[in-house]
Each structure stands twice: as C-alpha cells, then as structure tokens.
Image (cartoon, rainbow, N blue to C red; front, side, top):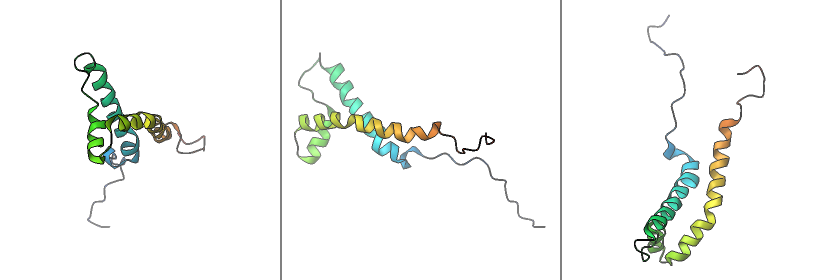
Length: 102
C-alpha cells in the first residue's frame, strides 16, 4: 500500500467563458451590436449626431464608413444568434442514449 494520497475524481472544473468559441463568435458580437443599438435608442432624442460607438471604432480601425460597418454588423446579427443557439443546444441533449443512464 502506498503512502501517497490520490483524491477521488470530482466534478470537472468549470470552463472559463473566454476559452469558448461560442463567446467569441456569438456572445461577444451580439453584445457589441446590442450596445450600439442601445446607444442609438437612448441617445436619439438628445443628440442625433452621435453614431454607434462600436461601429465607429471598427470603422476607424478599418478605414471604412461607420454607417456601412453598422449595416454589416446588423446584417450579421442573425448569424451570431444562430451560433449562440447551436452552441447552447448541447445542454439540452443527454450524454447517453441508454435510458438507464440518468
């Protein structure tokens, strides 16, 4: 018998969300688009010259027009929602097709 203690296997460590593809390809782009939309909704009455901040920052980095970047972001938003739905669909699937496994 050995004197070294080996702990029994426990539950798996939680995954840091920054490592997940669903975060980078789904959740983050959706949150950025939502931020732009919320800024425009709440700032529309106050100052109509303020544009969307995220689209403006991306346009500045790419040297493009902010309105075109915003249009592209909004056009891609259903794709980001599909990525989130596909990545999260696995939580509803059972790990085994064996009915005895609970």
